[in-house]
Amino acid sequence: MSLSTSSVLVSLKITQYSARKLDREASIDLCESKEASSDSGNFHKILIPKVHLQPIQRMVNAIRNYHYATTLPWEHRGADILPSKMYLTYVKEMGNLKTQFETLVNEFITDYPIIIKQVEKQLGHLYSESDYPNAESIRKKFSIGVDITPIPNVADFRIDLEHAEVEKIKSDLGTRLEAANNVAEQELFARLYTSVAKAVITLKEPGKIFRNTLILNMLELSRKAPLLNINDNVDITNQSKDLKSLCEKVNIDELRNNEDFDYRLDQASKFELILTKIEEAYNRSAP
Image (cartoon, rainbow, N blue to C red):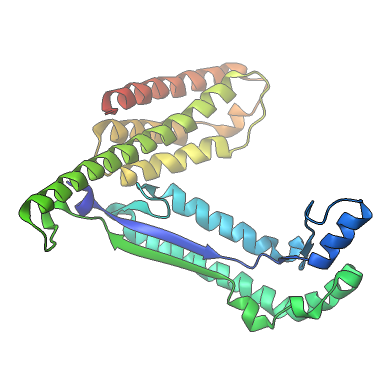
């Protein structure tokens, strides 16, 4: 199965209101008060206290994290590979996340007039009414968009050029697609390796404190890896299955019990066995 038929390209675009603005007058005053040249520094006003925008920022982070966890890197920045096996899940979840994002933006816009009145007192002489557009103008600064496009297909490449030039372009495209395919597969191996290696190192250290996410993140990755396995690599399938089985069986509470270090070491050795197999498979698949 070729990359062109097993995946699509997806671009995630997010815009936000920065709530910061360069104050040239304050910048000049600051430089003069420090007896420095006027180009020594700039003063940026915080137009809206961060606390009011933090819920939106956290949601943006969650959206980006979901996107990167369910896609693989493409050769061009700004686009990523989305396996067809993940397509429906991705579209549905991204729609849910976008709805949550828009709800938070609406709540901020509703509070915007009240926030401005509070800020006017906080900023003192730095306050300028012109720094604050109307609520609808601010709303337009927030957006989330997902663009989905097909991956170029060498077999269906058509352009009105001489045959020799067309063949050269198709050959170059084929080479690039193969390289992108290899990079995507190596990235998936790297994600598995990094996640399991972190667990092995943590569990082997006596008294090392860790959160439940140490295991839960591996479990989540083990479930997604088969769907991100664009080449149906048997090693990825097998190691994901073994990792999922081990994560589901492990007793997290017992792992975090510092008095039972033997149990931690026993589980660490099991994870380390999977880690070794992942590394061996990675080396076999490396171009």
